[in-house]
Length: 84
Image 1: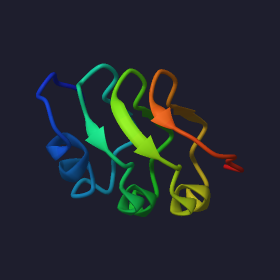
Image 2 (image 1 turned 135 degrees about the horizontal axis):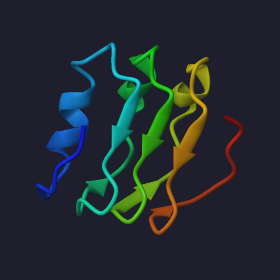
Image 3 (image 1 turned 90 degrees about the vertical axis):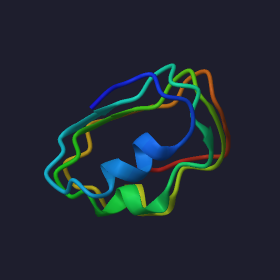
């Protein structure tokens, strides 16, 4: 899933697709925080959110994603330590 529409609606729509394996939303002018509900997408393997205006921390719920192999959040304002 990828597009260039400003805002966070793309991420909100991802939550409604539980079979997603890849979410690629780099450089989409997303703002706000990473939704904890992304942790409900059990099939998620790669989450690309680099180059957006995201802030806060990585939700602990993402740590429950057993298939997650890559989380890409460079060039954002996401901070803290993460054990995912």
